[in-house]
Length: 482
Image (cartoon, rainbow, N blue to C red; front, side):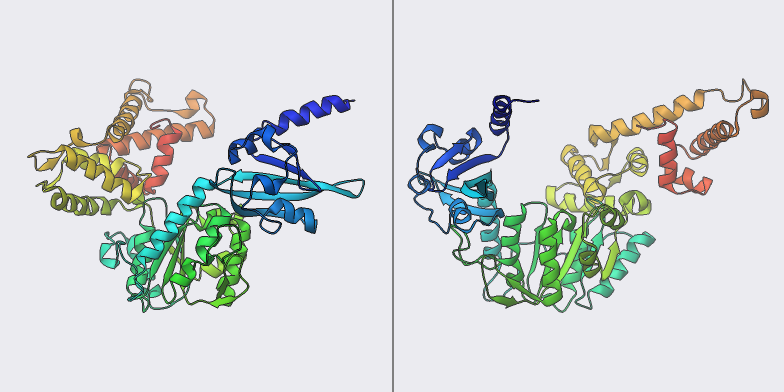
């Protein structure tokens, strides 16, 4: 049985090891406990704080704005509340606090606060908000300084890509919510802006917000705005739902939004009004929501990363953007487009990709999709001088290494003699089980198809009547690639 003194040692060790600040006051507002993390957060000296009244330490606070004193008075916990205040040197600090009343034998003895420093994030969010304010022209009520994409910027001819464009074009004729699913770099924002640019809202603002960029409390303020006095330092400021009135809001990485905020967003979509953080007045809004995710919606629903009711509300129109590895016929088209783009930008005169580079591009798996292809070509265009052809020597090292590894693996397997020096392979004579025999035969078919098609994965897959990604899976299964 652990003793009381041993328990105190353990609790003290935990208290001074955690990354959150801990502050405990008694019923008179004097500090009883103040850990090192809180001292660092508030740039205070622990010995100066212990036994001192809270308001004398932080003169910018009062019984209402201090979460500790408010909980001490109301005896009601406050969970994940943003608080901005000044320390003894007048430096502004922003924290997210969870604060609880403390009791001993049913008698109130004080309050406990656990705080996380978000001062830098708060400053960043204010800068983002100020930039957003500057980008709205008060006379025209349109967005300035942002690339304005339209459907002409969507390059490609593959059937699934054209299907996605056709759905987006139809969606631009309505104001229904849209959910766009596509891997990183497939062009989700270009699709979103294209829908806006061809809609009746095209002369109104288009405002995008990445839901993964900020913590819940700050994101809520950016989305819905703030009311003066809702926390220390808070000002009357409209959120992007008010700024985008009549226009479109893009919520990028919607699955990163915290569940509580998802519930508030759902209410906004259902009732078409918002309430600023700390406010009591409902503000009517008229915006179209386009949300994006780079994860399969089924996975998001299965893992409860997005509320089902919110998902159904957002996915009135579903657009699935295929990854570049499933758009092989578009690789050459996109390459020519980016070569032309960077010819103009860098004043170069490149004409084409070499056959070797084309082969590398067609066999690469493109985890970064179209964005990665553009970056690779931009990098190559930096390296060419008077040449007219982009060659392997101009490519990034990692894509060359990937290509070399695949070719080495395939050639190594081709050199293996699966037919016992020319004899016909006989699984019965070899006494192999059926699964082993099928695997061996499958390897032989893959090797032959790759050999006939000069190691081109797409053409080999077509010859075997399987999908390209299926062949890539089998190459990995049989140790033919990393």
